[in-house]
Length: 377
Image 1 (cartoon, helix red, strand yellow):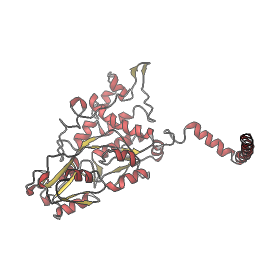
Image 2 (cartoon, rainbow, N blue to C red):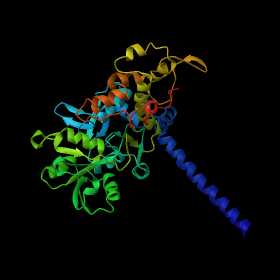
Image 3 (cartoon, helix red, strand yellow):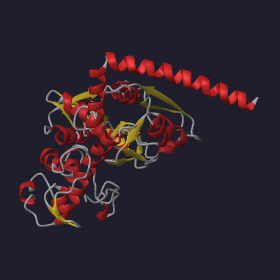
């Protein structure tokens, strides 16, 4: 039985192979040109310099589709003049790197509940919208998070005239927040033993309307977001002084860009654009001295800026293998400056947000913070 079974199987296999061979011959005869095109595409890596991934798609399109917030002053805010803020500057930095033009950005304003759907559907190329990096978002939302750009934490904001100085005083309070964010679970964890009523809204503007209408005893969100909202509080409602952000921070919120999972080349480009701004600050390279620094003899500076530098094989320009030219960092720094410039311009001590950087996680590692770039080499 075993031998007959093998003989039968072999005969069946040969017959099927012959039929498949005939079918393949027919395809070759009728579609030879198409086959040649497919083979040529395989040899060249597909369309564009990026081998057919998002990098090539963005370069072919000529614009970067960047998912952003449009209602948080200092980070992502839309005015009559256009979009501005910390996150907006990173959209511009990426466009400068991959397109040579920081203005070649299509900003797509998204609510918290829309953002990951838009990323998964390909409606945006990158999400730079005060979004917290968590394990489930990294693993289940089809997103890959790059280096953190802003270390944040959740806080609570209350009317200054309420006399509240501690979260523990918010017993039986109605606490307003946006839906579809880590804020909901963080609030539940912090208030587990304190009776309260969470009231969610889709957008910050709706939370603000409810707050102004007296429907909220407190507003909870990332501390930086609350600082932005407070800085822009209507003068008719008492201005920023009408609101108090309580001291307690009760979560970890690492914020940064996210890209679609599975495209390592695009991930590398976005990630190293962020790192370039951090490395530039550490090395003292800024938008003001970039031309001078191009002539620097410091080998680390030369490698960062894509200039010939000394290495194991003599003097050469380092090819990072990211699919973009090694000197795109020059365009990034010209467009937005280093990390310190981006921070101080948008959210620093001399802005309406007045967010001190010294002594916080957002300082460079050399100053006790968490911002740190691997070497460009």
